[in-house]
Structures are given as structure tokens and as C-alpha cells.
Length: 179
Image (cartoon, rainbow, N blue to C red):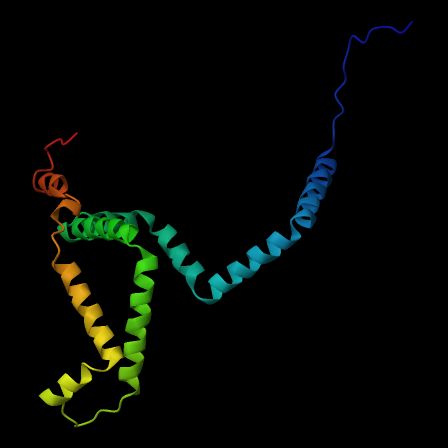
């Protein structure tokens, strides 16, 4: 029967052996992640060529000054209005039905293309030619579309509008707690 081990001796490595082991781990990691490393180096090279890396280096080197300027710039009424408008615009964009807007945009593009094709002419449009143009199905369709659009714009929208009164009150009196 074997005797119980009472003393454990640690295997000690020399500094050179530890260095070789660490170097081997790094080599294995480099080989394992070769593609990602090459792509990262390519991105860094492009950033360096475009001057982005020196810019970032300068920004980090002067971090406190840059942060101070950003805070002072952000602490203006214009900036708060810009942020408010961006939030409202984002909300409005979220309510747009792109499927309904697409045909309208295609028609606008078509109209712009026709105008671009026209040369600047000195030809004037008479009342008679306007009345005659109403018989053209494309013009009639466009006028009907425009009238429908104008009717929709004239529709009462107050119930659909987002109320921003709370934000305006808080901006005027920042000490007032709305929550």
C-alpha cells in the first residue's frame, strides 16, 4: 500500500520558461484570430490614412478641455431646442406610413424629372391653355391628387398631436418637478 503524501512541492518555472509559455499562448491566439486581426489592422490603417487616429489621439490627450467645451455647448437653450426637435421629428417619422408615401414620392420624382427635361422657355401659359390642360388625364389626375393632399393638410389634427407642454414648462422652470 502506498504512503500518503504529506508534502506538496510546487513546480517552479524559470522566468525564461514562463516567458516562452506566455509567448506560445499569444502566438496561438494570433493564429486562431488571424482574420479578425487582419481586418482590424486594415480598419486602423484606413483610419490613420484619413487622419482619424491622430484626431482621436489629440482628443484623448486633451480630454478634460474637450469635455468642458462639450458640456458648455450642450448647456444652451439652442441645444435643448435642437434635442427636443430631434425627438419630436423621430416620433413623427415613426408615425409615417411609408407604404402610403412611396407612390406620392414616385410621382414627385416623375414630376421633377419632367421639369428637369424641360428647357427654360419663354413660352407663356394662357387661360385657355390652362382650361385645355385640364382635359389631359395626367394633369387632371395630378390636380385631383393635389386637391386631396390640400384637403388632408386642412384637416383638424389637434387630437393627434403630441403634447409637449410638460417639457416647455420644465424648460422655463427647471426647479419644478414634473414627476
